Length: 152
Length: 358
Image 1 (tube, rainbow over the protein chains, first blue to last red):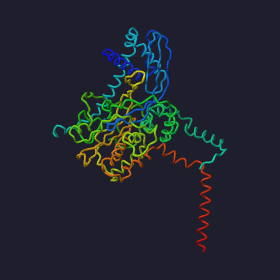
Image 2 (cartoon, chains in turn yellow, orange; image 1 turned 30 degrees about the vertical axis):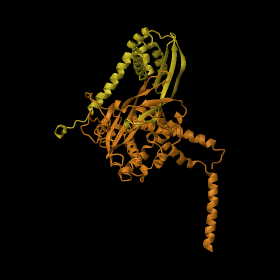
Image 3 (cartoon, helix red, strand yellow; image 1 turned 120 degrees about the horizontal axis):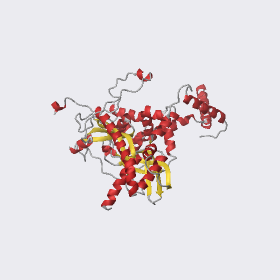
Image 4 (spheres, one colour; image 1 turned 120 degrees about the vertical axis):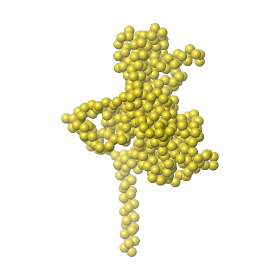
């Protein structure tokens, strides 16, 4: 794998991760200001199945099967010929399909810039804010032991 | 023996229609939505996902509603549903060190690097019924927010391992066995045992864990660390060849730290019992960790006299869907079986009466 392949993969992993965490309604709302999306053809799905989630013994030992989760996947081809994939937790076929379409379009330079600004970046920011809010709530429940300095 | 019978369809239909009405309750009351179940009975949903061995909050909430809150019935419904879906593959092993922590406590180190975080817990509540909740008292006051500490939160077990005081896990990357594909056979290795425990009944594992504390195979446990939070699940689709995030799930992890006297090959040190469950399931994760450690006792040369140390006993009985299936099948018609038993008892009784008369 060349350096640019690696960078491309990392970029693609990023937008796929953002889309996997966004509902179909969230994505649609951000697409409201985008030009109409080109037609696409479904190559596979959307279909719901299971992924076996694995953990590790002791947190860092041998892998074991923890239990399954529902996942919906979809593969599409857009007019330009680009193929988009999506694998998203849950059973939302609408989410998986639009995520696959955007994955295909994000591989095209002109679309990428527009969709990055309209969809990916704002969704990513909203997701980061949600995580940050949880972290702030957790921080408020952090225990301060007043004896700590004396104990040392 | 079972015998095919006909008839009863009308009675069964009427029974199920009544069940539907009883489930709904007084029609003057608003109907419970599955979203309300998911949001407001979240720990029931978590338990059903863990024991149903399928992470999907919406499906688990539906199962809780359909089962009228019978959580074992709900786990059964979820297990049945999962058999209708294809398996796309297995995730990369979760990196619980990368969890976005909502709760993290240790009973072994007060001044743990990264700190102790209580999270949304029942601990330290007074366990007094709160009648404000019965009065539909509007929205809660709102939780305060603090400044997150960016310092790392290393595992307690790792801190001990760095000092050589904690047995390290074997570096092992082989494909784990899967008891949903291959029925359990004994002895089962640790990955298979952990899978069985992760989907095992919370009550059964709680009692077994408790039994080890009361001396039936005691293993001197300390809660090294419990953490709960969200974690990304990564999956490598064949067509892409690189990992993608499927989304985040909430999990609870428990690391029990247990004394080990040492053996011929190993010096005295601490050993781990491990618990990991879907959702916020602290009691289950702790029980799992106690039982995991108890099941390691034969390999650590500590014997296997206590019930919690006997893997065939523990693993064959910890699954509540299997257990309820076998116990509840006793309700099904056993007419022919019983006829032959009846004959038997009559014959034995006649013989005994005759003997007494002689």
